[in-house]
Image (cartoon, rainbow, N blue to C red; front, side):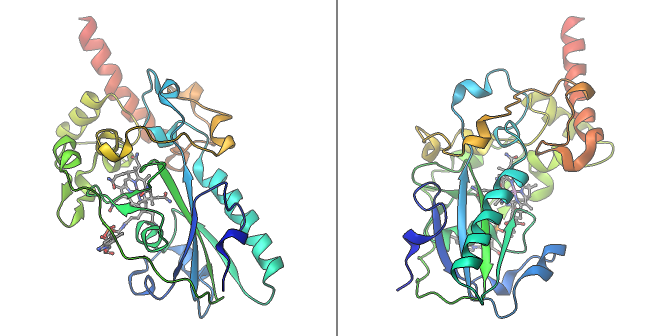
Length: 272
Ligand code: B12
């Protein structure tokens, strides 16, 4: 019997296993797809809870996931460490780690691995940490006897749908071009209605509206990932604050600067 309790970081991070076959028909096309091992059998899925406690977000102009140092690096390092340990323990098998920029539908993988339910807002909601969790995984050609969990849904209370400022949550999932998180990441000149959404939200990167209202996110536990507390920056105030180690850095500074400018217009207008 495959022993999940022997997996790296078990007990420290939520971790589970699902079959690769349940995901392989809907792989996203991306560069990382070529790293999927041939004849893959299993996916070891990790959650990286990132809610730090309300005090960390006072007066923030970024969404919660962008307040700590870039999760791609932090989660990536955990996943790579885990992959190294697994390669040592199960020599002869391939273990490839992925996070976010992944061909795997990570929400589905995590749900199949028993790590939570799928919210109406399309996010994975974990029992203990709510939806404030990043997802990462290790794909391997090693077979395990772990059975996939049944896919389950949230309470479906509809609060996230109502709270979404741009009606981006539909029955079928998120309408990406309407999601404010997506709008804050868009390059180039924004339309007037898009600018207004950013202005009213007060948030220049990402959006947490559908998560903050979720009853399943009430009283969730704070992150056990110590690295998320080490270099916290809840506000972005301008070019001097720009650094390469943030969740928004992949977009370079033009996009976040443009969004900041939209908020600054609001300040100017208030001062008139
Ligand atoms: C593209 C993308 C976005 C896009 C589009 C989002 C979307 N939901 O389509 C944009 C830019 C809008 C976005 C925003 C955000 N994102 Co994003 N995003 C992704 C990315 C890279 C791909 C998601 C995707 O395209 N899915 C395809 C669509 C079609 O999937 P779907 O809607 O779930 O539909 C499928 C399921 O419904 C499945 N299905 C059918 N029936 C059932 C039943 C059950 C129970 C389940 C589980 C599945 C299932 O079949 C459908 C077809 O495949 C993933 C990383 C990854 N590789 O998965 C991160 C990811 C989903 N994002 C993440 C995050 C953190 C965010 C934000 C919260 C960031 C922020 N604060 O601004 C927001 C939240 C917005 C929202 N409510 O979704 C996390 C979510 C973690 C979690 N707890 O779920 C992920 C997993 C990244 C990560 N590594 O942690 N994101």
